[in-house]
Length: 450
Image (cartoon, rainbow, N blue to C red; front, top):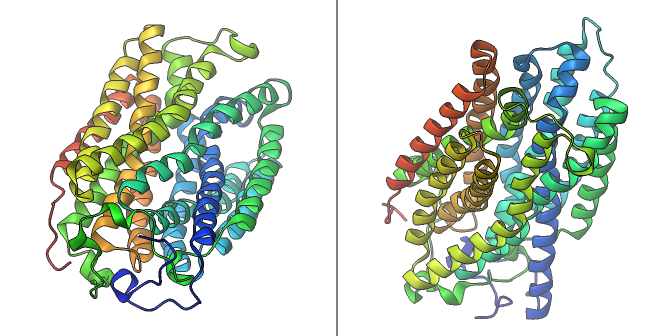
């Protein structure tokens, strides 16, 4: 089935607003969408991974506790979640280009303005919450829904997992490359210069993403790639249900998907934001290692290095499962059940304190990482289709990211300040992964009203 065929009301609930594009142009648009999503994901996870690397330097320079430093991160994730909701509707109407442009400006300001906050000033902390929390939150909030939904709108069935896996490779690349870039800067010039360097990287990459971004298929008379891999009953040109927010949020499918993803990222962000400190404080891995970086930073980089391979491999595995089962939804559900189990295993191995075993644990965390985010959006896409997915997943992201990452990050810092050890925090992360697994098991195969 050609991706350049005119979209019917069965795909989007309305006729396309522009003329039909050719098959070759559709392929180009799909490829550009993946490239732009890769750049957006790189910057989004660049913010997340860089915090863990800069946290100790920031705490030392500002004389802050772990909880204080992490509150800026929590604020960022709160505003990220609020912005993600509005970005969903923007993408449905105007595509990803304006989202990436806004993201470029705000992501730049988040790092750049924060870098000028003086150490020791009485007003430094509230200003930090504004500059890092609000600007970075709005900037990164424009990136997640836009990247996931744009890929889902262009690719479905046995095409989605592979293409999203390629786009999501931007996340581990950010964790790996930015650790290499930022670590020596922190050592020689401190956290302030590190943020200035990162601000330029964010602006350049997101402006490139905005220039590369293309319209969604329903706006250019194209169908998503991969429709021919779905059962014929799923691709008949009959009017499909166009979901309202109220209808979508009355389904068990959406709430179980939300809980599965929310508790997964609760554990994930707790670990991502605090794991370097765990290696440093609890395990004492402060000795210089690769490129003169502390061993704790190098071990953290293993997640990024492994993720470069696990992202496309888990994407292909999920597509292979779709192909084997012949139906997309139960395959995506199964992957969401498996995903947090890798997270649990990874954290348990990290708690061993044995360097080789911990390294294996970081690889398992990278496998979890490769499955969960795309799997949650993919499952939602099998239920709610393309036309209304942006606004539905945008509001879902508001709930997921407004609670999960902020609460997980806060609990990681709070439990350390309480017990002076990150071990209780890691056990809390395991508990969050367990709840995610249970929620995924409750995902339905059939949804009433679709």
